[in-house]
Length: 502
Image (cartoon, rainbow, N blue to C red; front, side):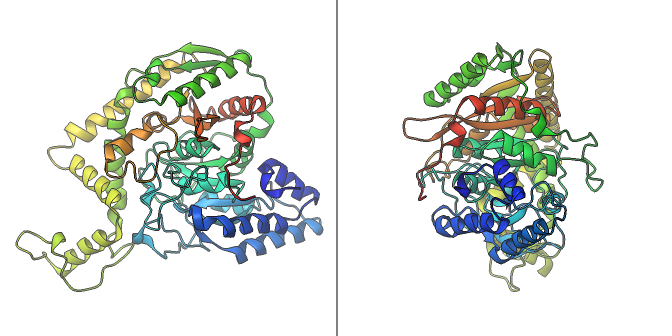
């Protein structure tokens, strides 16, 4: 039995039946991490001892006939933006280097209750701000399909570790495409659930009205399995939805006959790589052959999505990250002056406290985080609030209405995840606008608060994955997962492995 190639569903079943032990499974993936992560850099922290102890406890309770959780023995990697009481949570930032939270995020607690085995914390763009995972203070993540290329971001470490078989499942977060875009570039499946479907308690906030946690795995069926554990109401999160959680895995088998999938013609204009366009059109054809119908729909305000997102998100980030000042949270600069770049005109600070604040933030935050804080602070400042932030909120409402109008005509909307396949590391770092445009097809999902799923639909001639995205109305996760699973039953793109050591 090739443990590393088993799906999460099959691995959980094999452990439950005693065909393989939880310790054997954990050791296989931990050994894979040891072998490969030096070249991929997907993990920021791995706790082998704790993971093996957890797995041994699962095996012991199974032998004793005691009840086990639905994910018993399943190795899971967790994005380093989610709090873990027994491992550091850094958000890939010097600001939180070495920080160990006093509690688990709600999702992490649910994974533990389900008897999953947490193998480690994955690398990411600093504070989830980025589309290439090059903004990490601890080094870029490398795409397993081509180590010279980016894995996407901000959940690039989670995507890369699944693609490289270093974990069968990983947890990511998605603010503007940060689950779906890296899933697309790394050839795996990633689900961004409806806003509020999964509790955000314990997720270090980037943009609170946009952030959402979700699963990343090889297949939609594996994502469905994990969703049954991590979705659901949390009284500790005021935005958490109280709707019952369905048995996602039981709803996958229904055929696609009669399913209406929308296609947005504007998504196939200038800027879309021809090979990506071809792969996406082939996916539409596969859905049509499976019984779905394809209909052109309009999202007239989608062209304003990037501009709207890069006002709303930085404004919320400016507020959320204000707490990291060296006094309340985060890195504190050493006493003493000398950093005049942060000083007032005239070369002096207002007070030693202000100096400490300025120097701590200057030292702790990376360039992209500083850029977004400054953009958000400017847009919220007196005289500019109405012209920028308030206007962006009005456009956001129009974008949401476009989706509501479209879903009155179709059940789901399909299209590309990213305009290009994985791009070379360093290609876009000097051009922030070019980097922002990699999310042009994904930000609308977050602005509207709806669900979306990304999965592979082919490869370029150079061997790079091509991602296909489905978007659905609020709480349409059962349909999104079913449609993706049906597609994956008819194709084998999701089972392809990158050319890494066996």
